[in-house]
Each structure stands twice: as structure tokens, then as C-alpha cells.
Length: 449
Image (cartoon, rainbow, N blue to C red; front, side, top):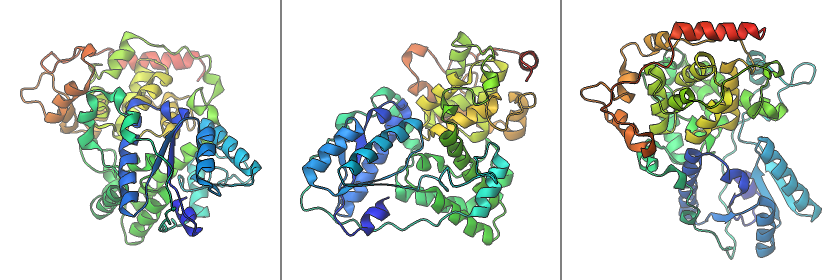
């Protein structure tokens, strides 16, 4: 979008609007948004431009800015969440009715959700054929950014610090800060490091909880600090150079696109069972067990380690996300929406489409579902993907003589009202794993899954 705006040759006023839709995002995501905005503003200032900040409903704010500046119109990057589509459609209609430019641009996904179609012209409901169709279609190359011409005068801007985007984080913000990798330059450096040192073994090591084998780019993708097309083509170049894990890495980018593909075509995926036959399933709601899961106090070591990793870093290893989601929805038979909402509040790499599809995929109510066979045993998963226990040792403090700094930092981040202490005994298991699996299978059989 910035490339398109710069290519017009006209002065460009970069604007960010903190609208009600954005105000509603979770605590960690909103805090991370503040870091992204501060870094982007600094980059623009280094190039002689600036970022104008305004708060309020998007259409009203933009109409006010257009009146103040006499601008010819607006350009923005498309979003595919239902609320964003409604908001952007209203903005586009209002501006065009006044004869102004109102152009939305692609860039947040590898392909537009409506561009990858089945032979019958419909949308894909299963990942593998989606991947094949996307690969056959090809991914456009990223467009280099153009230098932005600056206006003769700038409109007034809010001060970022007055927005208090990190207020809900309270004392947790200082704990998360060292784990944030913020901005375009940092994202590109992260990509280059991954391509240089990790991509060759990505397919072999990506599920290992105890190895730094993943790219970490989900955080930067979530905030537009790097584009998926840039990553795709960099990985394709590595693949041509012989990197064995490059195709599998591109498949993970395609999985992210598949999530947005589904959210666009079936927007109810974020709020209701994607498979309506699950609507009658007797999920448990809020409970003491659900709260202990949120607190990383289930007594199942790898589950608790993963939940604490998320609370300290704002991210969680993807294999761990599947383990904790399966434990909540299968062993505890608790509604996937409780997990989805907690992730939305705690993740700095929160992606609404991936979060929704991931939770429903594991729960069995979503695409590619195989509910009888997808009950992860946390103990065997830990043995396979954390064979020496290093991941668990990094994040669990109770019962250890010299807990790792990361394990102790969890207790510095959590609300004091939780009354957690690293010196307390390890929590007792909420459920026997074999009994929990048997109970889940019986419940699934009862609904005819």
C-alpha cells in the first residue's frame, strides 16, 4: 500500500486510526501494537516523513482528516476480518460517493482469499488441495517501497503515549519487553538469520520444543512489519539453493493463508463451530479447571510450561499450542472458545484467523477434523519433542533447586491476585491422562462424531 501511495508521486500523509475495532483487541496484542507504531513512526521520521495518529470511528476520523488536508483520497491494506470488511466497505463507499480516491491493496496474504478457487469456482475447505492450488497459481513478488513525498503542512496528531495501549498489561509489560522483536529492520534480520542457520533442518526440527528451530516471524507478520510474499520468495530462493526444509516452511505460510481464506468465506469460524454438527456438543464452560489451565497450573508439566511461555514471551511454540489446546478441549472437555479468548488476550503474535482455525482444528469442530485420532497425550508429546526436558526446565520453577530465570519471570508477570509462588509444590494433575482420553472418546462417540 505504501508502495502504491508513493508511486503516485503526490504528497503522502501516513495515518493510523485507533478505531473501536482495534481498541477491542487483547491486552498483549494492543501493547505490541504500541511498540509497532512507535518503531514505524521513528522509521518514517528518519526518512523525513511522520505518522499521524487519530482515535475514533474510522469513517468520521478519516472524513475529518480529508477536510483538514484537502487530500485526494485514501489508500490502505486490506483486512479480511468480518468487522474490518464492514468498516472498510463503509469508508470506501463514503469516499467514492464524494469523488475521492478509495483504494484498498493486497499484501497481508500470499493471495487474495477469493483468488484461490476449486475447479468449480468455490473455496477450499481442506488444506492440502488449497496448498496445491496456491503453489500452482504462484505468489506475486513483493513490491519495493517508494520514497514518500511529504506535504507542505502536517495535520495535528495524537501522542502515542496518551493512548496507553499497554495499560492492561500492568507489570507484565516489562517482563514481555525483552522478548519482543519489533519493526521492519528487525523482522528482515530475523528472516535472514533463519535462512542462514535454520531453514535446512526446519522440517526435521520445527516440532522440537527444546530447539530454536522456527523463524519467530509470526510476531512480525501479525503487525505487518514484514510481508508474507517477501518471506515466501526468500524461502523459494533458499529452496532453489538446496535448503531441505524450505518447502515445508512455505507450507506453513500457506497454512496461514488458508486460515484467512476460511475466515473470509466462513466468517463464523471465529465465534461458532465451523462444523454445525458440533453445535449440540456439551462443552464445559468456565470452571476451576479452565482457570488452572489459564494459570499454567494443570499439573501436566508440558502444558504448564507452554502456558507460562506464552505469558512471559507473548508467543508459544506451535507444537505446544496444539498440545495445550487438545488438553483443554479433549482432556478437560472445555469449550474451545475459552482457549481462543485467552490466546487472543495473551499473544503478541495474535492472528485472528490462525487463532480461530487452530483452535477449531484441534477441537475437532473445524476444518480437516479427525476428532477420534487427534487427542494429544501431553506426556508422550513431551517425551518426543522435549526428550531431555529442557523446555520444561526453562519454564517451570516449582520443585527445582535452581529455577531458570525465565521460569521465575513468570511469577513476576502474573496478577498478584493469582497468589502464585515459585517456592510452592508443583501442582497436582487435574486429570489422569488415560482417564481423560477415555472420557473424551466416550463423549465424542455419544455425539456420533
